[in-house]
Every structure is written in structure tokens, then in C-alpha cells.
Image (spheres, rainbow, N blue to C red):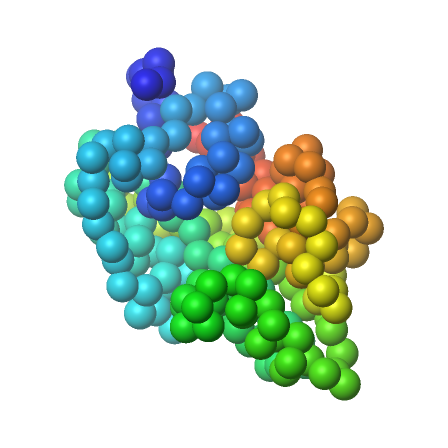
Length: 200
């Protein structure tokens, strides 16, 4: 288990191991202990019925903040393909599930992109909720790039293997954690959260 630091405990409203690793790598150096719901023996699925990333992240943060005695962070993120009207966007995870998994989702995106521009971006919105009734704070990040013509590499998770990051000039499927923690949409949002936590 983790060493408990007073006033430095945060619940991250996800059991996604990839997301959990990114948050811990970026916040642990500041002394924060990041718990997942499974660490706290919480089994809760929140319906993401919001109309945008902010609403979805708040729904998750609010639900978990009612159950834990310390602040909660929750994020909602998605892959937005510009020529497909930012699809799959909010439905990124559900689209993969409906396709039967990420490999099948890749193939469906490739099919839809035939003859179209492949510019895309990852978007992340973090909601930080200090108290159940506190005003939510939001931190957003974007990562521009494009969709590859075939999966490349096995690093990362989700849609990483089919995404090329423009700023790092690397395919996320082969990028290391150091690169991801500098250029990814989530890393940029967490960097803004870090600034807030450092001065709060």
C-alpha cells in the first residue's frame, strides 16, 4: 500500500491502469498519494450522460467525492478526428466497446477515413473537486496529430497505437512514458492541475 501523507491524498475516479500510472508519475513527486477506487474497495460505475467532457468529468468526480473523505480528480478524454466531425470524441471508449475492442475500432476508423484528411487530436478535461458541494475546477489539455494508416507499437493504451503526435514527432504506440508525460493531452491537463495544487 502507499504511505499516507496528511492533506496529500487524492482519489482518482478510474481503475484504468494506464491513466492511474500517468497521474501517479506526475503527482507523486509533489508528495501526493493517488488512490484508485479499487484501492479504496469502491465498486462504482458512473453513467457518463453529460453533453461534453466537463459534464462527464464532473459527474464522476461528484459521485466519488460523496464516498471518500478527501479530494477527487476525474477526467474525461477522447480522440477527435477532424474530418469526421470530431468523432469518436465523447464516445471514444464506447465506440471501441461497440466495435468489440480497440483493434476493431482502429479498423472501423481506417474504413471511415478512406480518402479523407487524417488530422486528429486527443482532448482531456480534468475535474478537481475538493468537497462534495465545492465549485468544480477544470484543467484541459490537447494533443494535435494525425491517424496512422496502421497500428504501430504496443505502448500506451486506447487509441495510442494509431496516433502520431505532431509536437513530439512520434507515434504514441512506440513513445516512452517520459515522452507521453510531456506531450500527451492528459499530461498537459495534469501539468495545469500541478500548478494549482502547488499554490493551493
